[in-house]
Length: 43
Length: 111
Image (cartoon, rainbow over all chains, first blue to last red; front, side):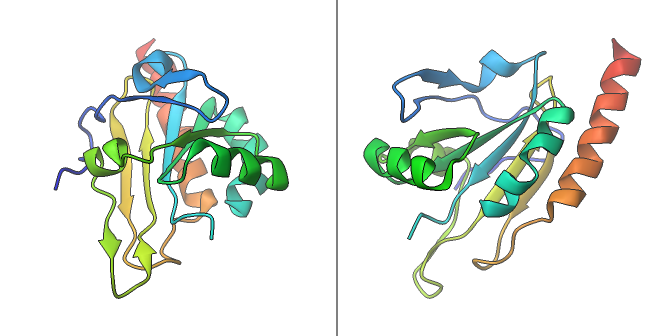
């Protein structure tokens, strides 16, 4: 199974948010730091 | 996520966007975000594409997905990677915020 590795580029991805807007990780490059959170689930 | 919501302004101060990825569908995300008034980006991943890309672990014996967090700088480098071993194994916000301060200081020096 792949994993993010420390001090290496985080794998880029594109997903659509729940409002219908497409979000790509690379869109934030040189603009924002990112805290990417993988949740356990809402229940 | 209540902890992240509580400290959201501190993350904004550190020029940081919080993105939450989960296996639920968009309607479940929408309802949860509305109920909890969450200010960050919520990304439904019902096909588990990104969850697998980042290797979020699933434990049948510990009732589901283990929490995971990746903090990345403006160059897209992973600067803090945490894969939880149980449901409560989540880094403290203070730890992440301290790292973000250092990352931002480095960015200013490099710019």
